[in-house]
Image (cartoon, rainbow, N blue to C red; front, side, top):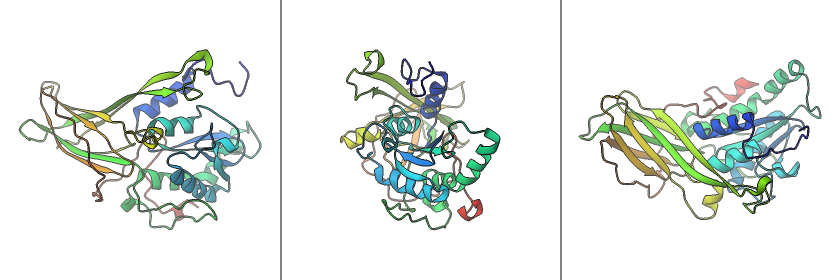
Length: 318
């Protein structure tokens, strides 16, 4: 197949797309950039409809600010051409990761690497640092540098947490701290083109997908986990919610103990789970009533593949 727009026989049919899907569903990438050529554009959801994404204010507001660093034109994916299943739309759609596509290199579709990529990185470093700072760090750890102000577009509040955070501690049944491993999983159905109407290749309407992510606690059982919201953007916009299934296990294989929770966590929420007792019996589901409004003293964390914690001033990236 030589077409530049062939979408494959099945969803995630190619090794490359399966690898991208594996990273997104096996890590909490709270921000994501898909690098492409060409066009000098900053693109955000959606690629198949001109309708605003549920988080359009954040996507567009941040996208326009990213473009002030690289000089690219900021716009929705569909304003370039109609697309389905692009990496950035997929990442945002199934995980809530704040995702963009950068089209680089002017009008050259396959430019020479040595003459292009280093210059592209230098041109985009400031934009990539801003994305990491605003999407992956708690507000208290972001550089105290004013955000760029593009001439149009939604505002971005630099004091707002833009992903979700879970904190907790694994203990024995009688409350003694114990080192453990915490797993978040979620199984869901993704609609295929167009909105599951059966016109996708092969007539398929849906695929089943699974998020499966793991973090090890500290020796005293405590953990701070930077995660994506449990509810997908379109599901939330429809007034519904989705939950992660949390399973905690003891680190000592000689004493296999388990604790379980059902967790619904929103964008911008710090959800303190408290102690998670590990025993042979499951715990009752726990769902938060409302987002916590306090900022907890958290360590900086790099979240997801290709995204890092930024601690330097953006002035250092010039």
